[in-house]
Image 1: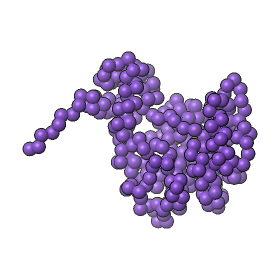
Image 2: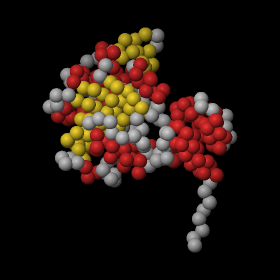
Image 3: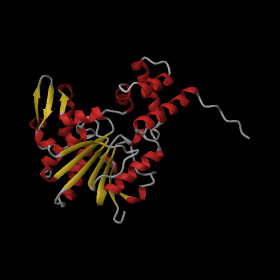
Image 4: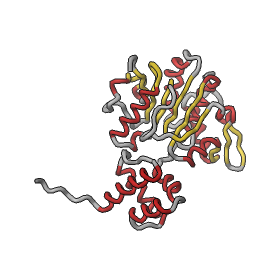
Length: 279
């Protein structure tokens, strides 16, 4: 019988902590990339003053105030408006002409963080004359991020990047037309917000909730292991209408996924795919 190398204590502790979170709070990180979780939990240990993950697990199970704070470390909240401008330009030039053919539209931004991409899509669709017939669903597992998204408030220091990205994405107006500035922050127009719904949804445990014409899930799957990637992509396939569109992040691909056969490449360079007929 071959000798098996014993698991490292820290790896055992990490698995036990992730299991404890799942059983107590019903947040499932078991299919997330373990190396990425390890880095984030290392930062959390310092914040909570713990020497080991076992100590952190004790706090998570016995102090209900700890888990919401830990969730900020476990979920990646890094985004910008119109991030990767060529993706939004491709949506505008290649996908929007097809979206125009529908009397009403539903768009799903999965892993929406604080709402940057949802607001970007709302602005793009407004500029293309489609927002009035569109409902954008922004979902995430982080309640604090969802509250931020609902507010539509961003730090003024970020706006220069947002503005440059918007212009490079083919923006038809000035980004400043869509927000008001006050006290070092900007507040996006409520007319955009009226076409958005932000809600809690887990790609690890939840199911499809509506039929979509476009699903945009960018820079989320890179944090998942293969089985969870396939589960999420299966949800997107199921959610998309006949010949609907899927957008992924620049480092993500359908190529080796269990769902690859259900999609055609649409804009290869910007990771935009189209669901095949009959799938």
